[in-house]
Length: 61
Image (cartoon, helix red, strand yellow):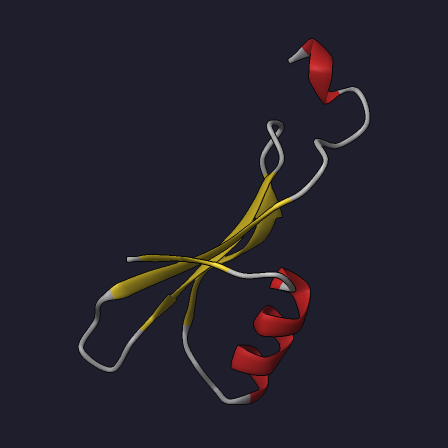
């Protein structure tokens, strides 16, 4: 399950502070997808994503 959010860094900090298990730490893909994954109490993986400008130099990837 994936949710698009407006403030990925804020959501990451909020969920960490709540003790939600982080499965994949926050990262940014070369094409501008910034995301992380958490696990709900049933083990379902939930991904939060925000589309951002690609990192410097990513246009050559």
